[in-house]
Length: 536
Image (cartoon, rainbow, N blue to C red; front, side):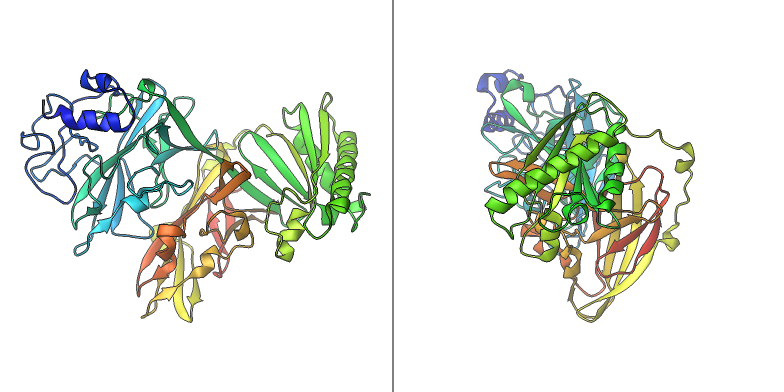
């Protein structure tokens, strides 16, 4: 059957056995769907079939991601469950048109990409690729995924043996490299499902802000998609770490949803080249002890670290003695029994930041206390009744870029599950000439990221005396861990995202930890003034 040929090619390309594809196995359960022609066409027939578009498929549909509804032009007309716009290419609209949980453990995510412009073709594959790993060629929709907020996990498509992902392939699926003006294509990804069978999920793409509260259907998806159970696949996930710091810079924490890592400043705990705790240290360690008491931890790790200014002969024993001093003090401050401590010193071998700036060296001089994350406090029902701003009341600020006026507008600070929050904001060039606004990636901790990102954003809880930094996606490597900002990427194929034409507006985003009791936070972005923003 002619309609079965593209499916065989697709499944074979993903490594599934030919016999499974030919007999209808090796694909996820599906409902009938009308095939769609390649992007950039308005032909009345779908690829691999002589039937007119709109005719129900009697066998496997075309290799490209199918649509549940086809028009005479072959466009996917399903209603959008959620949508976002590309920060780099605002004419590129991404809409979730399908989110299906299959076998209780997989998700099929379908995203319609539309060119809303009137004069230019848009390249899509570069924008939809996963930027947290090398892909070689630029042709996969490997950046589509979901955010498991409770597990603090960024979930990407499965990786089979023969390809980067179980997802749309520009060449294999005849999608073409461009989307013409007024046209659209639908791409897909098959991912692990979030734990706990949630009714909704936050869908993520590399192009724009995450899309929360997308309803998950437990019915079969429209079309045929590769079955992760039919071949060996590897889940691809990124741990989401949410950092924060005290306003007095005495400590900073990193919360990955499982463990809490408290980095205590050695400059506050000790005198230079000494391992005796200062009088101020007891106050800081008492706060840490309360966190340990509130956690289910049976083991607490205490690790001493140094910057690169001294030799290993000095840094190694000093970092160990400091870790031991913190261990002794903490153990005496705890009210809970049965906790075992492990103390080690690593010298300068595990820096968190670059050592080529004083700020980086200061933050690397630390004692790290790691333990199981404390149990969250019960939510305050009154906290849900926060005031929100109308469209004409959004917090705004102004700044300049190369002497040209630029306007910031906060479009949302939304509380997600798991103590996480999503900040969205727009930047507009109000001048009459092109302008670059590079300040967005000039954060003090920019060296901790693998690539440049719009990370110069800080959320401050004045009452709680705590500052919240953008989240990080952690990718294990042979040499340790690479961190990518859980915010708008402005590197690689997206390097032009900080360039603004006259009158142009771009929307940016970032993930943060949000204090459970706060109803408003002070938000500072780059060189704009601080804005007080309500949490909704």
